[in-house]
Length: 338
Figure 1 (spheres, rainbow, N blue to C red):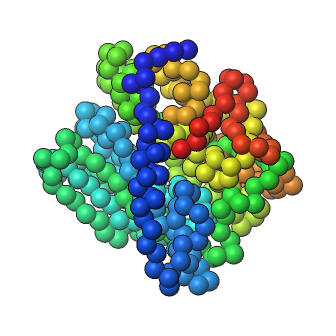
Figure 2 (tube, one colour):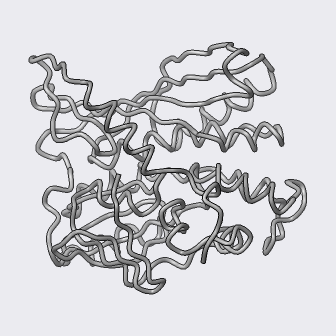
């Protein structure tokens, strides 16, 4: 299935940009060393018996739909979720966050709704929002940009990096709440091309388009922090920008997704409306899997029994030796990692 290239972001170009940028960052102080390689979901600093996890992320162009509909509370939740879901991939407990909001003009209603959403997200993740920065820069920002940075802590002997993933391990999906906060450049182009009104029901739904698309990102903090003390987890991945290609950020192995989650209707409808292939969908969206946990096969029962009534989970595949992400049901093979 072929489509115009402008429906999908140039993720290879993004990867090359980031790689070039990172290669220039050569200086390191010697007293607080970095733990593990770069490229993971969160960065770890050695503080003795514990490590400090630190990461930053934003809500992206989802805010442009929020601006069009003037609905902001969910964006605050998204900002927290995008960060804390990265932090926990190393088994680190997120404890505090600072936000950064840049905007072209001030609006008390936006401030109130964003603040409410940030507070709800903080409660869900059990973190404190301890500060931030608001920048009024109308010459630079068309609407608004919302991002944040989170710190977390983890005992060094409990860090999960993905290094222990091996042949035979099982891959589990934790269900997403919907689109989360990625792929919205593609979403907005589809809406424009198909002339879809945000206040009309989204195809296949008895809900307004704007409500379907602005569904807040699910936060997995409490479930993951509970399970890491019960089950031997080999690796974890937050399925964000780049879709299922995020799996290789745990470890370069062969990820066989032989029983993928049935995507929510929003994904199928966007696929049909945008004339996108399954390969493009799986390298852009989460396709119903918001978070992935890799465990050893012997931990299956404990894992399922602990989480079954807290979040929808499903075994979607297994690990083999090699280097690939294969989704056989849809004849998808994701390569050319960035």
